[in-house]
Image (cartoon, rainbow, N blue to C red; front, side, top):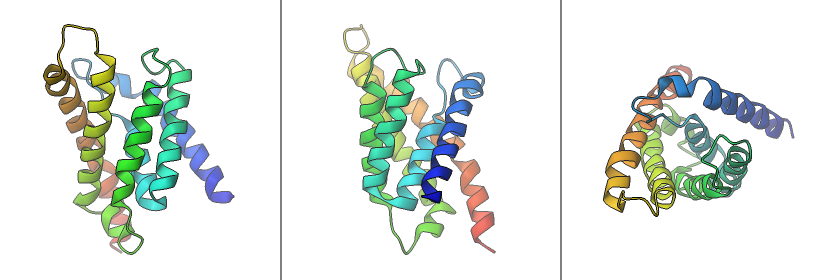
Length: 163
């Protein structure tokens, strides 16, 4: 029960960071997704089922708070699928090595590509931007930016768990 309370508090903290600080880091309307990095961490620590449920809850809160795009359920769907994909990186025996190594950045990058690909393909339906434009102009840059930001916690984990 104590672990759940800590996860809820950290999710609220990252949610506030996502809404207040991250917009200032945006480059040409492309911003990293701190909540997705947190979701990959949850997946590596707790597994696929917890990450999928956590992704749904985080996405739904994001949708309902207006931090999304106004399409209720799109962030919940994208984050649920992302939690499911990130759960494949769960390995109970190598958890700390994954968090402190480049596998964490690779997991965030792949998960962000799935998340952003799904999100922008659905969000940009009905516009003049095709699926290739959605992937190349929005999903790929946002995924790379999120993976780049994931280097910070990776270095923290590598320093913490290498001792």
